[in-house]
Length: 286
Image 1 (cartoon, one colour):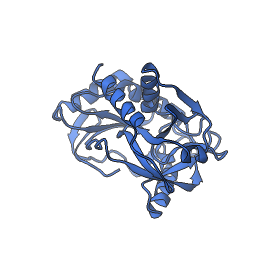
Image 2: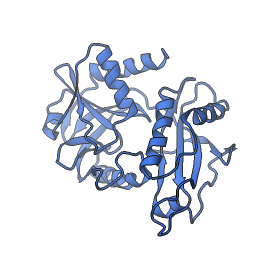
Image 3: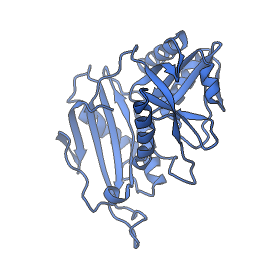
Image 4: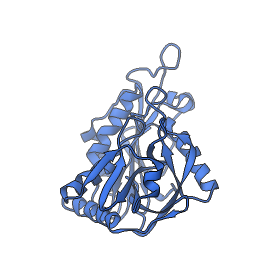
């Protein structure tokens, strides 16, 4: 993700202008990776699904044995206070984050009730509807709960995503379509994935190897309410090669159309556009 501009940071009980330092060298999060975050979006004066994102960052903290220090409502109040300094037509990425400050007797397990907290607001434009990407395969896979904290939006998961993305970029593609431990499609390197076949929508079943996104759930709900059949299913790479349309679902850009998967080309089709329209209709009806 390219960084934006006009950053504001909430730390130690107050808002600061700019990207201020928040973590010390000896913090547990600095040297042992006990960091979690979430990402919500503000655009055109609204912040759709803000509360679910704030609730999830607390669940993520608990999954890493970090003690949350804020309720979702407290974080929401802080976020909305910070957003007042942005124009209503600004597109802002909202990142609440926790990290452990101290470790237990052996240093490895985070110490209870020793938590760092910050919120970063960063102005990052939304992608235009026609901004599409391409997919390829990668030799790297999504881990399982026995190997990694896949039940959290944790910073320590992202180096694996980064090497997937770097491999795809080196092959000339924008993103990677990633397998789970069994070799079935899980998601992309950066977002959940959907495919369309014969007027029906399919997305990989949430099997615990990837974070089943809040925006993913919103798309499924919107489509079903509009009469579209949506399947959460075991999907293979060949299923995606045979698809009529493919799109990614993530909070940063909401929907990213896919125009190619390893030589298989797609149009930005009617279901992708319908999903986008349904999301925007839902967001502005709150």
